[in-house]
Image (tube, rainbow, N blue to C red; front, side, top):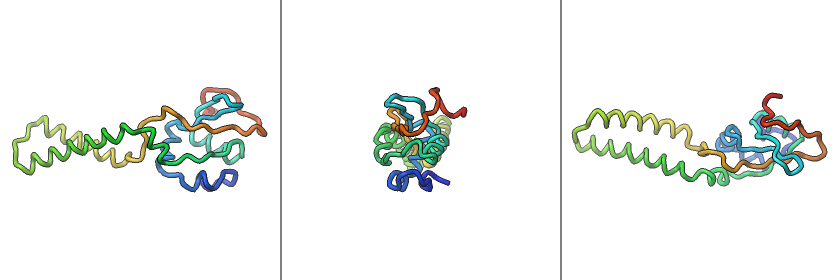
Length: 149
């Protein structure tokens, strides 16, 4: 069952969940606030459990808002792509290639493959999304992480 199938969550907040949202959750992008004070960084399983139990209500966070937090990543990906194009152009012109260039080509090729798989992954979480605890339910114990429950 996904977060979008959870009956206690609002339909609009879950209908648009993408791979980027999933990466953001795994990276610690959601922080639980109880009585307007930070309590813990939520793991995806905790977030899902709290939403299912009705203890928190997921607010809407757009994919663009998550991507806006990681602008530098696109630049590094583009540099790797340009580097690959450089090697292809040198090969097409039949210029001599050194062992260092062959090694760099191998690393750049493998990096490009990894970028393809991780293109939707945000760079890092500097500003997590706040999830507020509903005051009608009993708050979890204060800890650094709720993952050990």
